[in-house]
Length: 78
Image (cartoon, rainbow, N blue to C red; front, side, top):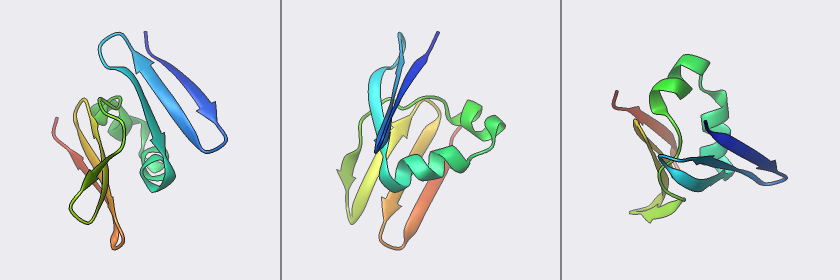
């Protein structure tokens, strides 16, 4: 039972297990290019976007997507 709401500049994902968290910008764009299998493994966001050294990131149920000026990195843990 997850839900999503698309907006002009982002998407909010919600589930009882994760709560509501937004994806936008380059992190959202990269998430949307993942295959359905990759998205299933990564799961839903568990945090909003937050600062990391030199960039931004979102944590997911099964990994992380991070953005830095040099590119976007996807790490799937499960």
